Picture 1 (cartoon, rainbow over the protein chains, first blue to last red):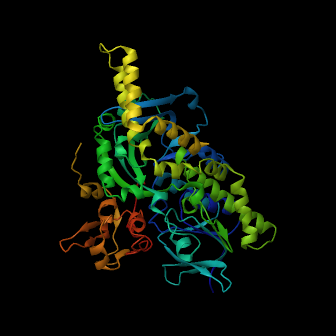
Picture 2: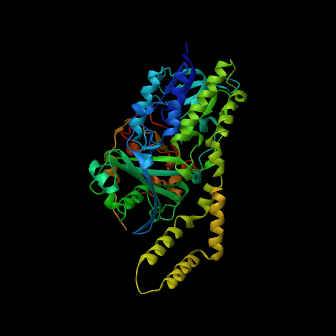
Picture 3: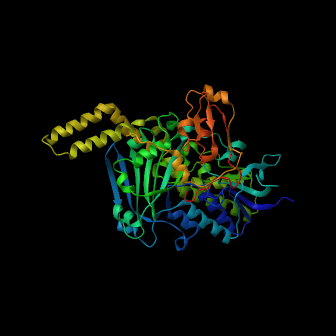
Amino acid sequence: MVEKFDAIVIGAGPSGNAAAYTLAKQGLSVLQLERGEYPGAKNVQGGIMYAAELEKIIPDFREDCPTERHIIEQRIWLLGDDNYIGTNYRSDAFNSETPNRYTIIRANIDKWFSEKIREAGGLQICETTVTELIRDPSGKVIGVRTDREGGEIHADVVIMADGVNALLARRTGFQPELAPQNVALAVKEILFIDPELIQQRFGLKDDEGVVIEIMGKVTKGMVGTAFLYTNKESLTIGIGCLISDFKQGAIPPYKMLEDLKNHPVIKPLIEGAEMKEYAAHMIPEGGYKAVPQLYGDGWMVVGDAAHFNNAAHREGSNLAMASGRMAAETVIELKQAGKSFNAANLAAYKKKLDDSFIMKDLKKYRNLPGIMHENKQFFGAYPDTLTAAAHNWFTVDSVDKKTKEKEIMKSFVKKRSVLGLVGDAIKLVRAVR
Amino acid sequence: MSIMVKIEEKLYQNRYIVDESRPHIQIRNDAVCKSCESQACTVCCPAACYTKNETGSVTLATDGCLECGTCRVVCQDKENIQWDYPRGGYGISYKFG
């Protein structure tokens, strides 16, 4: 006799956890399968966690959720060869009782979330890789096959939360392959350091945190960004670029990360820290146009596996949690109405997504990935010219300011031409409109 | 700026549960690698699992694999990489992630 559940959730990342918890909490029988040694063993995140979506799922999460620092300051830096231009936003209002953003260590959050799922009655089995979806003669997904002995399990609906590679959906023919220009590779390290040094270097007290998003020369002209985040007793530093750019073969990702760590602006911030883990992960960057089919007879796909990532705002795990919750709510509603889990009924999941910030935000930035991919000047020429301009402007010498202005204007026109500058401005507006 | 990077030193910090003699990634056809102009996998892999060998082809050692999937994406046009997840419980086991 094959075991049968109301729902099977594949993967124990943010989207899978949100789905499994929401289902279990409503009393549905749910099985969550995770291939890692423990929940989080295969997961990588920068990471910043946004409170709002987790709060919708677990309202009192702050009571015991192992977050790192709440973020009181956001820095955005454009790095030149030995300099940076930046903008910072810091506010004491972020020191509220209910902070909006936290830095996190992925594995800690995943273990905590899994505990909540088990408490809610969900069954979670780790060290189990799902090898294929089981389909009936009509093509409807009716369960999964795993790499365990006799590992066939059935369910009314299967929620695929198996991450950016989404092997199951691709192998079943539900999704096309990931195009190299639609996915980034990011590498990162966690660096342990005396918390007092973190506080001194970043001007923080207690659990206050700073996050720095970085663009510029460190990505060697490739489409990409870097980051440096403050945790309680560690810093995470990472860098990522589109795989289509890495594929050109100019530099290995770990070399790019090492150069970032040795950048004259970054080095003093991480000095003396001890590296304890090196991680790599792909990030879906294709946006709205790369979102695949999201549901079918007996199945739904959520999180990174559904390409839900807002590259412009560095948001991923909140889209993951929201989509996991919406998939689960769709299941609950259909179950309560006694309806079947065919594609026509599961279309309600897509409706929820369309009505939410997930699809609205992705749609707003639908042109961004293409424009960035085709206009490398935003990652090469501009950082260079802007930092050189700043250097010129802030160097006090005997050159009069009017001449300096002219020199700066000339340097921009030389790099991009007047038409080029106008064109770039239009492209940027188109990209974010 | 040129800094030497020893990838082994980075990977040494990671926890792996190695599935002895059951690599989860395989190169399908050595000849395809030999004739591949870019051999992009040898540059793109964040764990340097792929190295150019003396015969002009590519050698794959999956022990340090971070399971990101990048090689799968870069070799898509040649379809010369057979990529699976490791068996449940094996492979990279992130302590922090």
